[in-house]
Length: 139
Ligand code: CMP
Image (cartoon, rainbow, N blue to C red; front, side, top):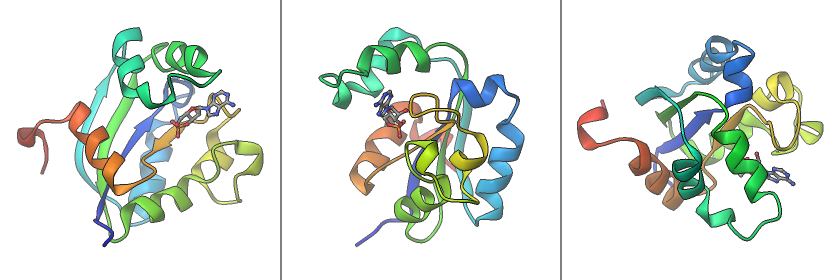
């Protein structure tokens, strides 16, 4: 059964473009509640750990470099059917394929610099949320 939490990051490109506010607005207007949130900066080691599942992919080095290039906002969000509902809200990984009205259509510039991350499964949502947040940081 689907659980009701997902994990997201507002990536360095969207933070640099000063789009934290409008992106959070789209999330809360779509009915997501913030369970946990922090503004932080990954380094090459922590970004590499977070994306270790992509280690063998040709874009891994570029991904780690980009994700450690500036601060990010990490958050756990809650809504019914959160993982699937949030992936619909953010749109396709490649913004050229993202639907109208999605966050990536509005704010992403390329497949690498795509403004936001969203977990792809309930299992990964739990792993990714645990990467950033302790039990004491969830409300
Ligand atoms: P994200 O949802 O954070 O999960 C993995 C990330 O890898 C993805 O978003 C993209 O930013 C990045 N990614 C996926 N495919 C490519 C690619 N072909 N080139 C560069 N980055 C990619």
